[in-house]
Length: 423
Image 1 (tube, rainbow, N blue to C red):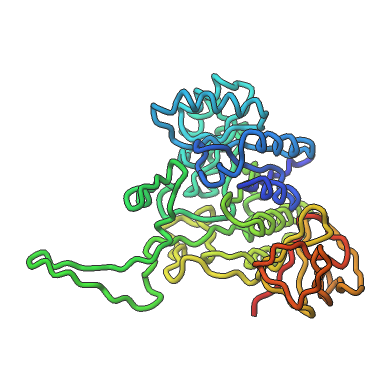
Image 2 (tube, helix red, strand yellow):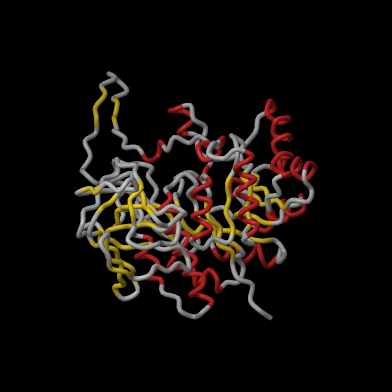
């Protein structure tokens, strides 16, 4: 019997990220429309028409789309939520991602033909809770981030037909499975309604008060030790994909990040696509995937709780910065036409710039007046000789503020990126 291949599930924060995720190897994407999604900002990037068009496009490529309806509604919103589910159902997504028993019940009433995936916000940690949700009609659980592989194996053993999805990459919340009120208390932005202000990423000054005479003193901290009190590192399980898949209990590997960049959508999809494919071909190389993911901006990486219990490690927090630079700077993005690129960072003639291609993408070597494209081992490189805009104006250099299309020396696959290692 052929082994069922695990699904790669990527974030789709807007129509362009939707396309990029699919071009770079995702089997499925998730996204939403309106404030019923737990990412309000990305939910506004789609309307019903554009989300429907995206679903139709994905289905023509045998890809799946999961619609996020994972917010926590108030009484006043229930009638609107019912209409929202009905409208989404007409777009024919492959599943709804929901968080609460009430929304499960409503989704089954409105669209009984559409699968229901249970959000990680429901905090499923054991087979008893998983079974209760399965009895309600849930076909897949997105396990709590605090689960270990042993926990997940126990769930699968008791419920072999219930699909299990886990997060393998992206931002981590310092609170239990995202149940946090800090942003709500400080900024009036409710995390579990989709508008987290990321207060945990901010630096804090610590004060101490004498209760008798009310003297307030600021505590001076040693640089690099404890200023960022709540700032969790980002999840990165790339080097553990082999042991995760060896378990045989995981059906989908999920990447967090609907509000992150186009480049993030591309690199995470392509890297985890390669890790999955390499696993099934017996060519797994954890160091390679980690190096590629280091090209992304990140808060430092941790392998979370899948392979270690929270109390067994103390490296999950970044107390120095809210965000560190990745190894590479994105220099340009190639739209679907493949003839031009848009500048994202300064480029000068003579710069050697790497080309990041979509999954299966190929660019031909060339050497002409505009530039040279060649391969350094397996890595495609471009060196511009001239920087010429679509209006045929030649520039000494081009910077991110320039929104003109810039000619490429040869046709590139659409959605390619130009990037350069930062020294």
